Image 1: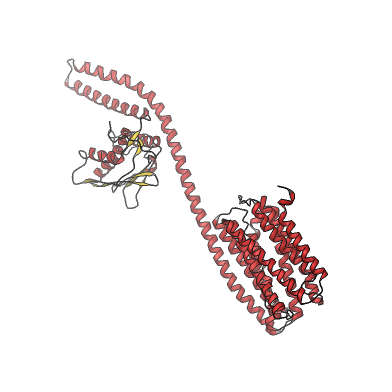
Image 2 (image 1 turned 45 degrees about the vertical axis):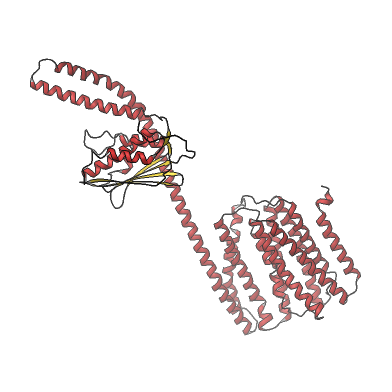
Length: 581
């Protein structure tokens, strides 16, 4: 694409401006020139509005909000131009001072400021968007208040055309300077197509601001008329904006990650707070230093009080949202801290079990050999003629040796935990079989087991024997605790939540003495000879090996609660295994 084709809309804008300039500079002042200039300006604004609406329909998200606000600005501008055209062309009257649509003309740049301050070129979090909107609304409310405070007394309370024109032109100039500043800063901090949009809009509105100053002076001197030299800058501004809006369709406007320096993020809220704090100062000025008529001073004080009441409501709302955001951040931080703490505990426990397993395996093998010899020699000795006292002592030796061998066997079982072959497992069936195994051990009528399994519980990929060992160990511990308490209820629930099968073992027994240590090797509260303290450690290792999680705690109403989480099988195989082998 050639340079001329790439910039064809700007070439067309220059041609339209040149054509208007030729007519403006060559035609004489009169009704025809007034009709031509007013209608030409109205068509130009309508064209800019149509292009903005067309861009709105082509876009979505934050970019569409930008073009919505730009369209609102052109609607306000068009309203003023329609009123101006109707007054001059159809009523054939000179524009009065003050004009009723001056306030519409004054506020037409406000949506443009909002569109740029919205920064559609940056991604933003929802909470930050809401706060920025509130800050902008406070600033816009303050700006409306400032217009009413300064201009309205000269227009509606005590008419003073000279003072009205001076204050209006001063505020309008400040507003145009603000538009230029925001556009320039946005252009310098943006990139890509959005930088071009902002800088072209900056150029167009800079031309409009400079031309407005000359036009206002010409109006004050009585040398301005519609279609005069001063309207060329107005038409050039509209043509430039139209060209930039049309070219923006080819500039690939992309929204990127928010990357402004932290100090720029504070400008909007700090400016909003300064604006609100300025209102009491203006109220004091109206009471003490204002030399206007009494009715004007009273109007200004009333305006300050009403504005402070309305903007104060915005401040309270903003503070409420900030408090909610802070509470949400604290909750997220707490959840992250607890998750990190749990992960750290799991890693420590895993490393502890791995190191201890290697140590136990070596020690158990060394102990098992002499124990075998002790049992063998004791059996040989018992076959010989010995006294009854010696036989009693010998039987005690054999009994303790066999108990030690059982302990060694448990140690070896703990140390030799392997991944095992995993198949598709029906957890509901395993839970039922684990509960049935406890029937001979629990006292009838005292210890009850209640199963609640979700229908169509998803299968998991696991080693059925190992998971069965897990369920039996947890159930057995709960039944033993309930036996010691004289009876109770063990509830076993199984359900699926977010692609995870959740198993809950809840009893109403005395609870655990130290829930934080139940998975530590050799920790047990059972009497000597009834437990080694390795069962739940093995359970922890098995669950970790299956990619799951296991936690335990005491319930507030009493009793212990074990929660197991095992990932659901994403692609079920045709074969399932629910037996323990």
